[in-house]
Picture 1: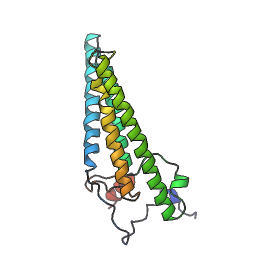
Picture 2: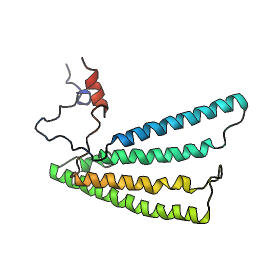
Picture 3: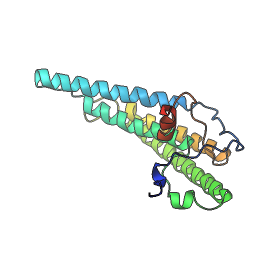
Picture 4: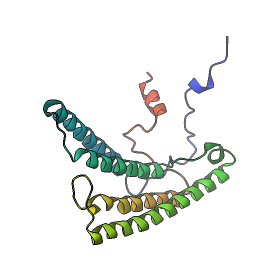
Length: 194
């Protein structure tokens, strides 16, 4: 009889002596609900366009432009949630190995660099918005003012930077998820077990 595969073994229970994950001052549910709303809008717009194309051999001209904007906004909102939960992209070999003190220092350094990047991005994109307004730029597809789309980039960049600063202040510890929402497949599997 062979030994059980470690990859199929259920995860170990959380250490009861470890302190609970700190709560974020601004609820993470904001990003969660924005994600749901944006995904629903994308689905509705795409479905309406498919129906119109099928029944009339024409299409809504505005759907592609609005869909691209919503997908970019969705990526930015999801980035904000990932930063707050400390789930942004990293090389796990370096980030999750070694002593806990080193792991925490790398998490704080990573959060500081993310904050710096998005503060810079907010400043540069604010200049882009100002140029769009000053020169009266219009969108290529439907001709609405371009700043209607570009104004969201500095706003969400500031939100991501603030989430990264919050992660830094928590010492690299991710904010606690909404207890009513499962946050990982392991939790879902544990809930399904009898």
